[in-house]
Length: 152
Image 1 (cartoon, rainbow, N blue to C red):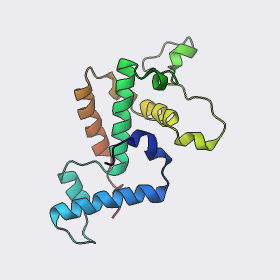
Image 2: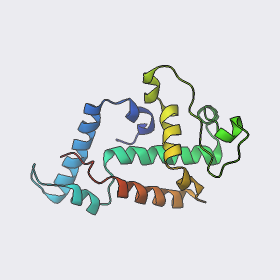
Image 3: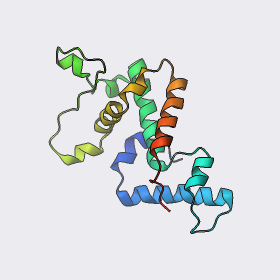
Image 4: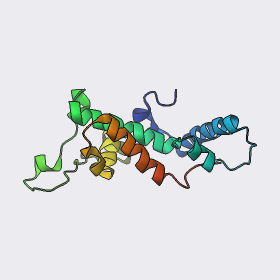
C-alpha cells in the first residue's frame, strides 16, 4: 500500500507526514517482535532486512529510473531528462543528468527534479548489467546509509 505511486507523492509530503509513515512502519516492527512502545527498534528493523521509509521510497525511485534509462519507456517521463554530454561537448567518465531549469522552490517536490537528483547521487550503481543485480546493490548501499534515521 505504501509503495503505490510512492515515487510521485513522497517528495511532496511534509516532514510531519513522512514521520507518520515512519511511525507506522515502526509500529509494524513492534507488532512483529511483540515490543513495547518505548523499546528501541533500529536493530529489529535491520534484523528484518527492512529499509526505513525514506530509503524504501528512495529505492523505489532508483528502480524506476533504472528501468526508464534501460528501456526509455514511458517516453513522456524519459524525455524530460538530458545527459550532460548531450548539451556539452565534454568527454567524462560518469555522465550526469542535467537538472531542468526551474525558478520556484516548489519544483523541488516534482518527480523530474528528484529523479535527476537521485540518479546523480547513485550514478555508479547504474552501471549494473541487470535489474536484479541493481536492486541488490542499491539495497546494500541504502541499508548501510540508513543508520540513525529511524524515528521512535
